[in-house]
Image (tube, rainbow, N blue to C red; front, side):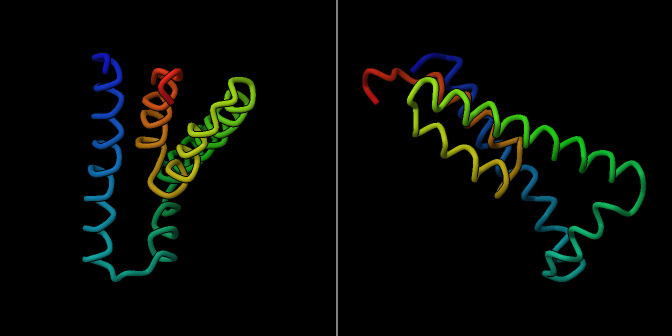
Length: 107
C-alpha cells in the first residue's frame, strides 16, 4: 500500500474518532437526545454557518462520488456516502480518497 493510502486511511480513522469524542462528551453532559444536539448546532450565527458549510461540502462530495463511481464503475467507493452522513465529512472524504486510490485491478 502506498504512503498516501496510509495517510488517507489514518485521516479517515482520525476523522471518525476525534469528532465522536466531542459528540459523546456533549451527550454525557446534556442527555442522549439527538434533537438536542442538532438544536445546539444553531445556537448562534457561527455554529449555523459551520453547519451549512459542512452540509454544502457533504452534498458536493456526494455528487462527486456518485459521478466518479458511475464513470469509473467503482461501486465500492459508494461506501463513503453513508460515512459522510453517519459520521461526517472528516471521515467520509479521506475514506473516499482511500478507496479511490486502491489498485482497481485487484479490487
